[in-house]
Length: 171
Image (cartoon, rainbow, N blue to C red; front, top):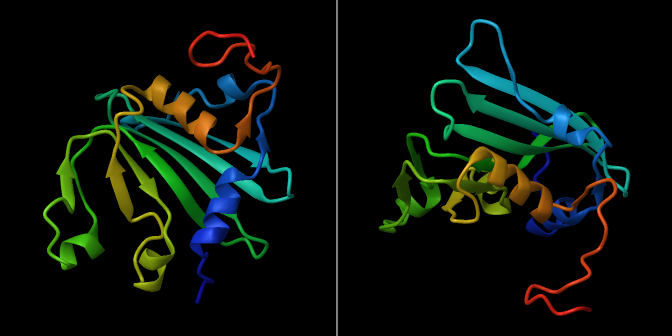
């Protein structure tokens, strides 16, 4: 049986500084796969604490709003854990534990959403990232990728610290 990541471990892994390579944008530009209806790309990243991560990008060639941007953590024994998944608009998603509790908002359809790894889903024998929330943090593949990079501990080469705060005042 694979080990269960605690919510605290998941949070530490998400926040671990992850330097992107200089050519990160081209390495994460999805490429068509032969005989498939989607484009895909992946890139391996080593975090500052020595952990190995993989970013997987998929996008439909038919519906550009149907995409996934996935952050995978590879444990020391080679086991891979999906920490988060930024999805576009596709089909329906049901949060199974919430549905079992009879919660009204346990399902949604055709909405941008983020899958989040949780300890409780693992403990119930479900996919680590089986829980998802609708989001308005992005509205396209490109804005989802920017949000993904900005919120999961990635550092972009050459990024200078902001000289102004969000109101435009100098720091």
